[in-house]
Amino acid sequence: MGAELRRRRRALAEYEQPTRDAWEADLVAYDLLLCEAAAMLDVPTVGAPGAGEPLTAEQRAGLEEALAGAGLQVQP
Image (tube, rainbow, N blue to C red; front, top):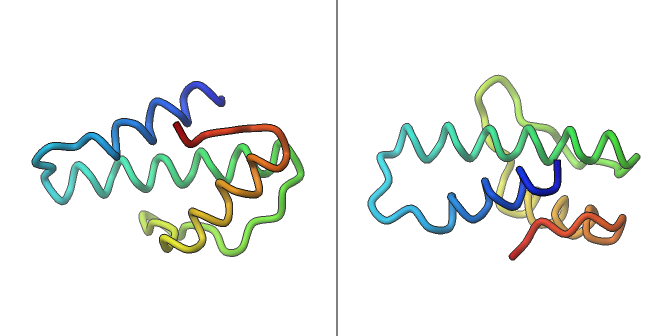
């Protein structure tokens, strides 16, 4: 799970000229994995992505930080 999260996060950061649809789909997939990891580690989530909707940047950063505190570092 951790390796997949890190791979997806790197891919999002390294998009050179993303199409909006492709980038957004990858972002939603990353957010869903973040929420899944949080559930596995009993880390509370502040909101969850809706049907095809990404987390806000603040929610994502908070969740990444909370996961790091639980021992799962996803940021490079």
